[in-house]
Image (cartoon, rainbow, N blue to C red):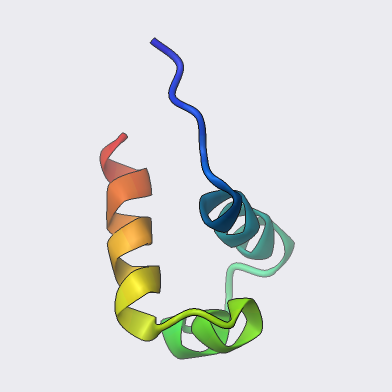
Length: 48
């Protein structure tokens, strides 16, 4: 079954595809979301 990504997950994947080097803190800053949110969403994406 194909799972759909919400806007935040799509933005996170796009950011990582453009530059996989920045740390979680920088990604959170770029996307204007909290560090715990980035961690949680990355964990969920990896578990899919």
